[in-house]
Structure formats: C-alpha cells, structure tokens
Image (spheres, rainbow, N blue to C red):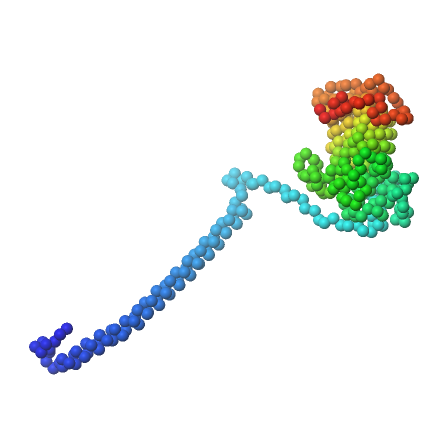
Length: 380
C-alpha cells in the first residue's frame, strides 16, 4: 500500500508506517522456514506411523493364517458326514540289536532256546554245559552236529548280534547234519556275515519287504523267511533244529538225498511255516500227519517221489488248496485231494511198492528216472 501526502491520516508519520510494514514483512519471511520444518517433521512422523501399522497388520495376518492351518490339520479332517481320513500305520522301527560278546552267555542262550521247545529239548542231553567242552568240536567230524554247531557259534563265529545267535546255531547244525562240506553250493555258510547277506539259499524279510506276498509285516528284517536248498546234494535225516527257525515261512529241500522219517512235530513247531517242499528224496516211514496244520498257516506240501506209507490225513483235503498238495508216488491207503473241487485221486506209487527203508544205493532219482516238476503238477 502506498501512502501519498493526500491520503496519509493526520497524526501518522509516513516514514514510521513504512518502516513498520517493512518490519512485518521481514518477520513473516523469518518465520516461514520454521513453519516449513514443522510440516516436514510432521510428515516424517506420519510415514513412520504408517510403516509400523503396516508391519503390525502383516504380523497379525501371518498369525491368523497359521491359526487357520493348525485348526484345519488338527480338527478339520472330518467332513460333514463324520468320515475321518484313513490312518496309515507307520513302519515299525527297531531298537539297535545288542551284541553278546560273552561265550558263556551265547551258550546259555542256545541251551535256553533248545530247552523251551518240546521237539528240541532232547538236545540238551547232547549239548555241553560249559564252553570248555566245546573246544575243538567244530572241526571234529565225529562230534554230534549239534555240538559242532554250538562250538562254531560260541568259539569261532564273530557275528554276535543277539537276534541271530539261535538261528545261526540251528542253520550250522543243519549244515553239519546234512554233509555241508559236500553240498553243491554252500557260499557264505559258516561265514562271519549276517545270514541275510550272502548265505546261499537264504532270504530274509529285509529282502522280501513287508508286502502282502509274505508274512514279513511287523517282523524283524534280519530273520530268515525262505530257505531253498533244493537239488544241492544234501544227505542225512531231516534235522530237528529246523524247529528253532520259528520265523521260517518256506522250506525247500526237494531233489536231495535226505532219508528216514519226517517228524510231524518238527513241522508243527515251526509257527510261521506255510510251505514245505521235500519231493524226490529218500524219506520213508509214516506219512506226515495233521499235526503239520497246527500252526494255522501251513497250506502247501510237496512230498511226491519219496517212500512214505500209511494213511493220508483227511484233514489235508479241506486245508490245502489246488495243486498245493502232491503225495504222488508214495504208498498210502486212502485218497488225496488234487484240485479245488476236492476230487479224489488214489495215492499211488506207480509200479514201485516199497515198504520200510529204501534199498541201499538208491538215489533220489532212483525209480523215477528224469521225472520233472511238469510230470507232477508242481508249479501249475
């Protein structure tokens, strides 16, 4: 505003008014930066508050999502109809197997296992009670096979895991009793390796798995399940120590030169045995009887090509399925079952009717020539 001499009110000094206005303008200029600084500070504070709010919102969101997931997993598995999801049983886990280093403890374990079973407890009369009595017996061909086996396990075998000591004893006794040194194949036998690793003819649950095709589910993987020594030049009688293989499912001894009777009690005491193949040997005496069925799982029996006689158990006809029973070429007084419809077929011995022991020098192929599995229905 410009004052002229005509417009300036009376009593007002024009110079003073001009100075006052200039001072006011200067004051406004001086306060402007201060006001701008206050605005900038307030804006920064607002930005910090926004960031904090954003982080808090994200944190709350994450916690909320986590709670929802937990609720779904724990309590949200059922649908509206109340059907729960299927629960799969976890695979068994096994504690570490203890090592039995004490030779006295190993012998005691063997004697206890032998004494528990009614079939094998008679072996206690043969087994030494002290380790000292086992010295040098493993390599003595005149010693009892059971004594040789105990000597080998206790004094020579370095595989001392508790879960295989009794099985190794039983198998070593089979080896010594059936002329193991003359077997066609005996790789791994009487070695320090696990019986599941490289002992010829042995298959353990660790190799079979826990599928429905075997009875290995829930079983320790290092127990023997299958033993196949077919066509392997075994001689001698049916070893009683088979009864100690209580996890064995399949025993195959066909086409050897084993002789003498087969004690049905041995078969009955093998609680997991489902299949027995002893065809084309020199076995004689009473035919295997119904006690073989006492374990509740036995369902396959091949005994053709032996010298059994007596009455064939009728119980087998209702238990053994199609082609799972073959008693052909033995002498027996009643009929056998050979198919699903339980048709009866007379159990014959072809043209050879032999009672009692087999003649000296007769081999497993003896009167049957080159008869093979196809002639008898095995595998059909």
